[in-house]
Image (cartoon, rainbow, N blue to C red; front, side):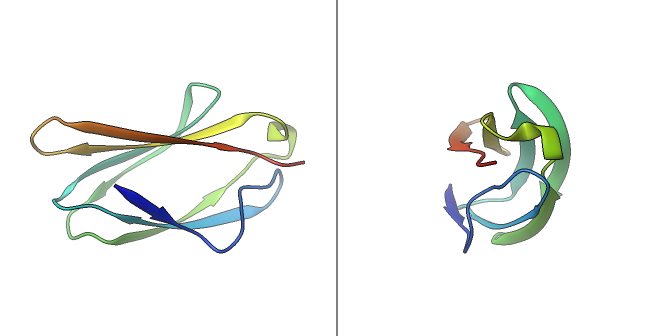
Length: 81
């Protein structure tokens, strides 16, 4: 899984990310371990826009990608205030 974004995640703003993977799968977005969004990625790369809550500054945004095979990739990004 590879993540591409122009601006880092910032509290109270939209975070636009492109997720590139070798095979179709499912994407899960978490803040401090709490799921805020889940969606399928049937034909990578997938482009998503995620609203980061205002109170999320200083927390961690995790993006997980689970391939159809069950393999899980994960990346953590700090959320700025």
